[in-house]
Image (cartoon, rainbow, N blue to C red; front, side, top):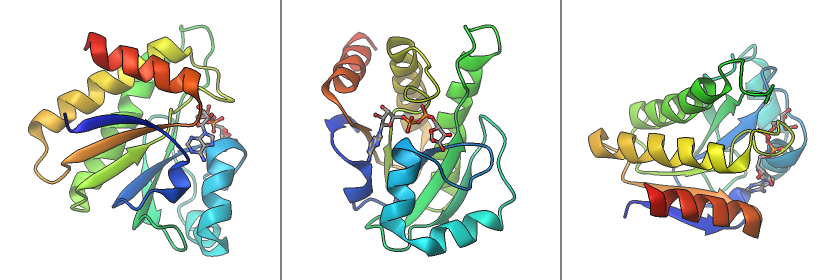
Length: 168
Ligand code: AR6
């Protein structure tokens, strides 16, 4: 299977592109966003400033600087508001937009964190189903992207993505 679920720290992945669960300012924050900016170094923030933000559900690409990954694809996921604010469609859009950008930049390997399931409180099982569905569908038509890894920070997150993949 060209979609793999692993437990780990996404900042250590030597892939063509890692995805950052950002916010709409693209100016950094906590969680995986903070970890990526710390590991990439200050040039990442300089490049992000020039992007003037990003809409929820869309994505923008920068270089990876001191990261082992060549690129960082920044996507602001939806903040969970009970499910009535198009959160599910916006989360699906995050995965699609990131993969489309990776494809345009001729990336072969991409690693995602679990977008929106930390500070943004998107229900984990539902987020995992959406992520697996969108990644699997994209891989069926992709020309360049060959391998996608879901990098889960903790065991609970990994179990949710393992279940979603098994049910796919
Ligand atoms: N590698 C992989 N996953 C990680 C790492 C890491 N190094 N660190 C944390 N995670 P969150 P969100 C996991 O809160 O919910 C930021 O402040 C984490 O355990 O980082 O999309 C942004 O600036 C969780 O499973 O992102 C935004 O303001 C997952 O990454 C806001 O948080 C996502 O958790 C975005 O919230």
